[in-house]
Amino acid sequence: MTYDLYPVATTKLTKPMIPFEKAYEIVMGSVVRTGTERIPFTESPDRILSEDITSDIDMPPFDKSSMDGFACRRLEIHNELEIIETIQAGKKPENKLGRNQCARIMTGAAIPEGADCVIIVEETEILPSGKLRFIGTYIKDNIAYKGEDVIKGDLLLGAWRQIKPQDIGLIASAGKITVSVSRMPAVAVISSGNEIVEPQYVPGESQIRNSNSWQLMAQIARAGAKGRYYGIARDDKDETFQLVSRAIEENDLVIITGGVSMGDFDFVPGVLENAGVRLLFTRVAVQPGKPTTFGIHENAAVFGLPGNPVSSFMMFEVLVRPFIQAMMNYNWHPSCPEYPLKDDFSRKQTDRMALIPVRITEDGFVQTVEYHGSAHITALTGADGIITIPVGVNNLVKGTLLTFRQI
Ligand code: AMP
Ligand code: MG
Image (tube, rainbow, N blue to C red; front, side):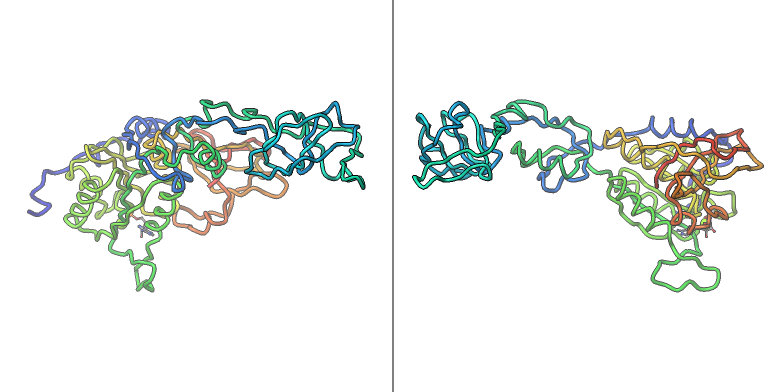
């Protein structure tokens, strides 16, 4: 069966350009959760925790010494003390302290019965009689008491957070050798265009290296999902249809770049419709990124991103990344501090929200980087982040506070 026998897609030309906020709402309203899986905790860093972690023990689990020294009774501190045993970490004390007795004790060892403080080695001396004398002035307890940090049953980590290295320490202490985490969305990446060649080739005349696919694979990994590369679809409806259909079958999300503009070979929206995707928008009032396309299929959601690498990058950050994280029920908000604008800014057209690459200057300002448009890929590597200029705004005076999103 050839593509031409499929029903003719009509959506591409009839869908209007929608405001970015509306596009964001549609995207976030289309999220389907990926569900959860149980994995070894050692493999869980950076994953989204999907269960509450409680402690099965008190922490510390027993009264323990926080210093190397001598466990004794505070009331007898100025007496000469008999040393009755040495308590190593991991060893149970053998004796209860009697009158004027003490025990040599190591950091992390259990406090013997009868002791209420630990005097530190540096503030003691051993007398010729073999007894101990305190030569310091001020004494702290130097005891970490059973349960002072955590009581058995306490909530240690709430669900729906991204697991950090320090969380792993806590999970290990709680003895949770497996944890429930959100399943990572499987995200297919497809590039399109007859002119696109893979990075290992020197581009011939009229060819261009494939930067989008690999940039997207890296962005997908940073968003916490699993990228799967499906290759380059030639500007051929049938080939694109086959590749898109297979990607939809095998993944939770499909991202295809290129082929979404208004050129003669930009037939991706039509192909998506023929593959059973219900297109929800094909134009967004953003610059760059206007032809961004989004649709849903019963098996997967699909983004059609513009072919220009800067557009593809930006649209991923502002639409696809929040979508992926919501699939894992991770309510992620980029931290967006405000910085004053370094220089006056102006633009002529204001019908679209502008996304502009910027850097943070040493004196704490946000400054636009040299940027020739959506194919200017070095503008992104020279940038620390992006600012957005709302629809209707054409001039910003220097010093205006702007929200900065790190990239
Ligand atoms: P298109 O959206 O297909 O019209 O492509 C817009 C522009 O982006 C064209 O100049 C393409 O050559 C370029 N482009 C498309 N796909 C890629 C890609 N995977 N890597 C780098 N540039 C691309
Ligand atoms: Mg193209």
